[in-house]
Image (cartoon, rainbow, N blue to C red; front, side, top):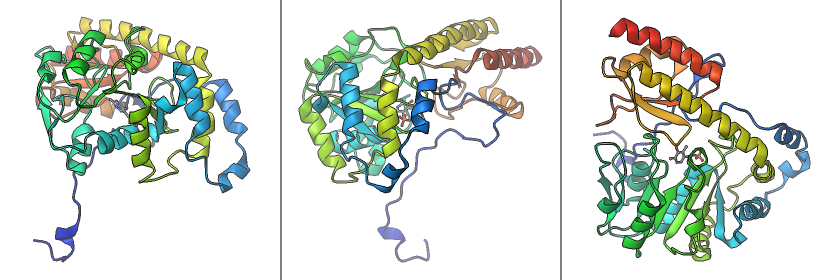
Length: 358
Ligand SMILES: *Cc1c(COP(=O)(O)O)cnc(C)c1O
């Protein structure tokens, strides 16, 4: 027992553990799925043009410029877009708004490890739905009573994409609950994989996106949701009951600019996809099992070399991967796709290690 009388009156939570952000610039940082390519020249120009006087004032609480640019980009009206401080903020607000219910919400047993943290923090009950042996989401398994569903597509940390038909079947089987599809990595998947176009047809669908991965802007903190005007309104009501000024002036202005910068964005995505494919092939040649990736990272394990061993040895060489000490995946490493020269160094390092250990 603690000596402090207030201990029992305080909220105690087990927080999410983000990947390390080391200060050392010389490392090969492949642990948090950041985009290795920096912002475009156009964005750098816009950063230099920021109006200092605007920092004195409160920003526009509705972040209208950014919302309008996103609505334009997706060809929807602006009452179908909600913006937040990264998709983590959008997801936290969505949990608060849509899962205020007595039934359990459902998400995969292996998925973004923030979901159970928000659920616990908000007192939302949940049930983990196991992925198949091949680490796939099986739509039928979600065909049961629930108070909401949240699934990333592609899933993290597996990088595996789910088909639109499977998502549609989940939407149809859970008409009375909100289904959140977290599309953090969808820009790295084949075109036509997103379900944003289904928001009018399925009134229980919320699609969440981020600027952090495909748009190279994890440091700016911009994420958004696209859904029908009713659900967006409910989300905004919760947001304005919590913090009106979530979006700061640079995130509104630069976020808007980045949306218009589509050619640059497509270019870096194509480079990453190309590197992902060649790196996956090389990993397989070294004996790794690599799950089929539709994201900007791969999830891989080696039959002869412990994931922890690889993780530790890599770190000594200044190469950072992500390791999750969790059931079913504790022999896997999640490796973000960096630039070609970085991945070459990673492959050389792994080749040496695997040869030594096997
Ligand atoms: C990275 C990630 C997010 C959060 O990204 P933000 O930087 O907060 O926008 C959300 N969901 C998944 C599955 C992610 O991998």
